[in-house]
Image 1 (cartoon, rainbow, N blue to C red):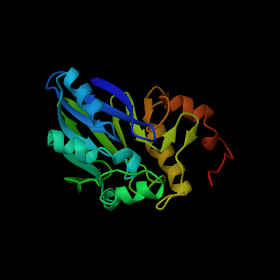
Image 2: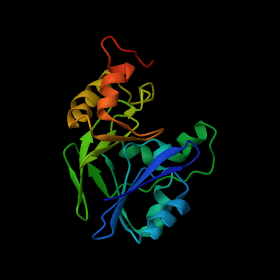
Image 3: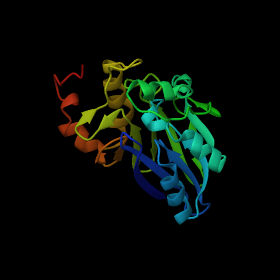
Length: 214
């Protein structure tokens, strides 16, 4: 598997390129912006983009959807619960003082928990992990999981946005991510990578009587 991470967009989102070494097919997870950099990274390994996958519908993770889709013709995938959010992301960004963002086109495919996204020889399993948003997903494959803003190194995503649910987020991480195995590498939407074992042991939100994000 070819795996690249780029930090993109005005809010410094981790964008991931997952490529199949044999077929050269690729998926881009959370193209938050700086699409020229994403395209250059794809071209460096001669990868052909087949899927753009949003882990959730917040504009900082979806801001490059249109430009990347226009440039590559790749299919856009997102969980059905967050699909309505991406078509008016420019207004959401403007409300935070960020101008010039284009609305995303609508998705080509709506994702559900348990779906499998096939990228050449790579299978990405969709894990519905809501709480940061109602349609938040994680994507698991051999030894790694891409978690969007559900889980960070030592923290979790905010749950005070529309569609947020603190208890749901904690439950989803425990049931869907922490059961993958302690050695699984966790690639979050912001900040450094971590492991399932590290977060189970040290993340204060999952300790007995842990913190609440309010």
